[in-house]
Image 1 (tube, one colour):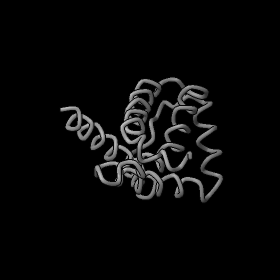
Image 2 (image 1 turned 135 degrees about the horizontal axis):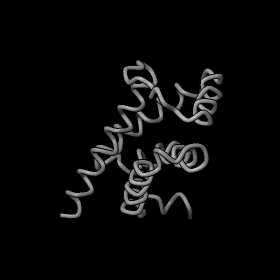
Image 3 (image 1 turned 90 degrees about the horizontal axis):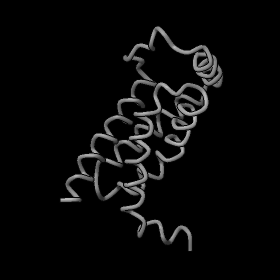
Length: 125
């Protein structure tokens, strides 16, 4: 039962990151009209670095796809982890409006990492 619940959460988590990554390339989701000024300034700064958003989008797409499948979930979680930390930091420091969803995604990320802890053991030995 626990593995089925983890699969559902991993599937949703992976699809959310896949969608976010694809949006960075195709811009099909509009930006919110009422964005806090600090967040708009920060996003503008991110956009000035031309290679940053495509790199994050690529990590989101690759990590999202890998998280969906149980065999590659551990690798996908490692790929998405730095992106997830960045999302969490932006939503705690710059604008707290997205903090609830970022918090939920971070908890799912931690659960995936915890469930795959044996696969990471050789990395830290």
